[in-house]
Image 1 (spheres, rainbow, N blue to C red):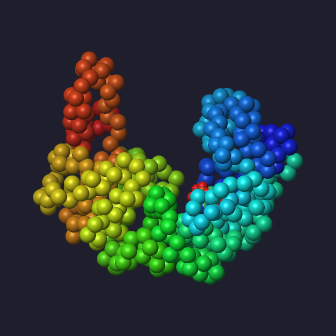
Image 2 (image 1 turned 90 degrees about the horizontal axis):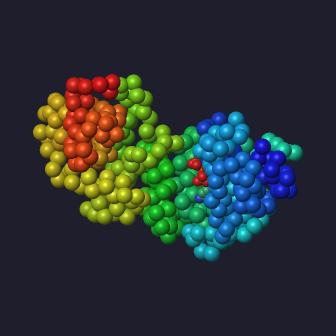
Length: 412
Ligand code: CTP
């Protein structure tokens, strides 16, 4: 096993951080972080030599990612394909100035743990064969888990990394914990450091936050802490905005968590993929009262899908007409709306007052649309002797319409 290899190299090795926290709390977590007191890259390479899989390393940071593959599975029956291990060398980080990216230097496990955000994330479990399973909890993470507390390890934690304020709220909401009094005071005293953080880093944290189960409560908590004043500006905590966000969450939930055609899809769970970019809709909701809301949200986009959602919202808003609510045929609605992303349709829908009464058919359409099975593939069309070209997307589209109208089922 892995621990035996660490013993061979004479390194102490530990699983660390979020995975230890989640093991203790009983949460699922498949991101395994390993820290070694020794050379992390050398350790990763040895694991790949021994068990197979691939290694990508970053010399500058002393880190490597080892990914298992089918070869590992064939060799070791207890190893699953596609597991990802982030392996780092125990390190200490310096921040040259607040909110900067850190400079890294080798250190002991204790120093590595001390630089982390919260006590619940600063525990380790040794995996060397000789001491397998030994829990290392220098900073009383277990006690804080039992008391449901989010606590920083040192007073400058939020000053050095203000995104930790958003992380604190994320863990509060995820686990039903609260910051302890001193930690909250430190967070409040560091709010003015938030504007020094790049939009990308803020956006990544907000994305993580809004993709969890309680985006509305998180937004309310951040409003109560005064965080939005430093990200968005005035007015975001207004009741109207919060109502809009609640509506958004409600429709997203109805559309995505419905069991349609026996396909259970839960695309809003924290560990799910990024197929739907609802997070950007939450952000747009918060900014929406601002005259320049679109430009302001655009600065936080993380990929082309986010940009596309915003473009679609803008286009859809301009052409949105109440007559769409009169339609009863899902196929006809699909003709009107197929070129718009589901996220944009949901967003614009919740801007329409009284939509809940009127939009039953559109919501039914969206529920079915997110669960449209791959009805007909290009491969199948080829087998039918149809020459590849634009005709393919036309045929597929007609098929979708017929499916939505119930004229064909996924067995046809
Ligand atoms: N960490 C930190 N400060 C940050 C981000 C991360 O100290 N701003 C540390 C924490 O110890 C954390 C670990 O790095 O446990 C890994 O970070 P990440 O993968 O982002 O978080 P997880 O704690 O694993 O949380 P999640 O379950 O959301 O992945």
